[in-house]
Image (cartoon, rainbow, N blue to C red; front, side, top):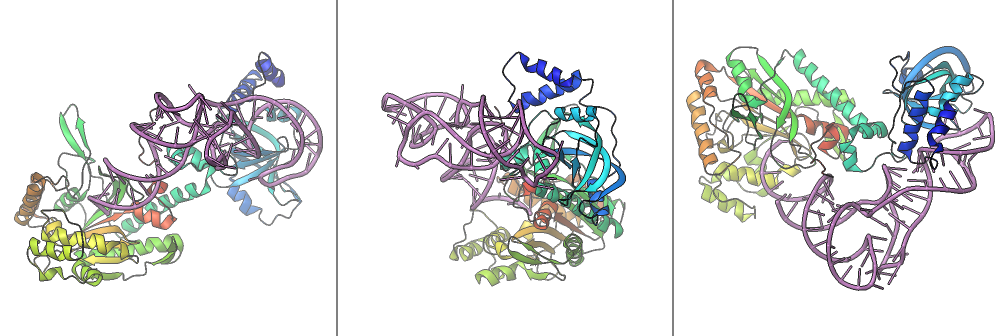
Length: 503
RNA sequence: GACCGCUUAGCUCAGCCGGUAGAGCAACUGACUUUUAAUCAGUAGGUCGAGGGUUCGAAUCCCUCAGCGGUCACCA
């Protein structure tokens, strides 16, 4: 009957050879034979990985009476449907459809089957003489009819654009994509557990912020209609986290969230990205160095079973304590220039120019030091390293350094030449903070789109009294790139930002 | 944003000095109750990213546009 339906369907024209037409015809034939291509009922008693584990010692050619049901996607069909490779979320298992084990009706249903369909299959466990663990199928059902073809079963999907645009196909075809994204989940869970176990409290701060604050960055701007006001998508959570410390919500608050910066993309930049940020009472940047390195090292150990692993041919060792170097010393070491020996921007400019570092006009001393650091040092910091004591000019939220009033108690952690963390002893003097904001406002008015804005309510919160505290931020995406051996941030974001195609 | 590169069948890829489109997988028909990238025989499938130009003739050369990738700039 089903075959008649199929014949009728194509009797009017030439044989259907288009893959999509063929699948649609099979779906129709199914319906005509009284089946639904998307039934409600299904059974599944076992995951493939559990069966592979349970029966790993089952000898070749052994039949059992053990009855199981599996379910998943058909990835390959061999020998007229006698051998079906089924893939569930855990693993693959072969389904053996032998005519001696199946009824006529069941065998006929094989005609409706395509690669890509979701099926369940019930039967007994055996290991074939060739060594493949299989379910000797008694009954199977198509649970979801697939009506678009899958990529080449051997080569998978290699077109990088299509892998990102159609991640669902990428995940079906490419085990590595799946592994990387699952690893990301594992990393996030570990970090949350680590922080929660240490007594930190996870909070959520607004994504829609009336004032851009907490970081120097170009924001996305959106509009709320009924409030008739523009909002900035969060570039940082910091100022809100510290408000919570003013309120005494907890000793240590943190957020793992999505941040938005309207800047260029690259293998390590996506317009929306994930950071962990936290603020801890009565901690300073020294404590933050311990927190960052212990947390990251524990994550590395959790994932790789060791503090050391190879990334793109380089061994990275996260064993604590990490190397520390002040920014001034780091610049001195790699360029021979001592920027503490010059006071004015003009002299700093001349010093940087003497080594051929390209600078924008109008930069202040701190910006020049940072530029020299970024251009000459950063890429060389392969092993995890804390670069400490950032210039005051580029650190408006960091408390002034106790030994040098041109510097602050701030550090950033680098690995593989990338910044992965940023932390400091937080400013809690409202007047000092106000002055720092106003310097940012001046820079903003001079055309620096990334300079920060005055957040008057935040100053108000500081006047109520912010206890001494340390703040930290950790770039989750970069950590994931490193831990998954990925080439690009897009590989560890399920749906990376792409320009829509207009065709 | 700038420069360089890529774009050919549903997927993976060939296609030389410009001469009119090829293979494997997937699909279809058939053979084999055998396999594991199953095999064998056959069939069908393409506005060569889009638009324009040069030419007797363009997938191929030139221009514009689009998407993606890489590098740089900005940044985490």
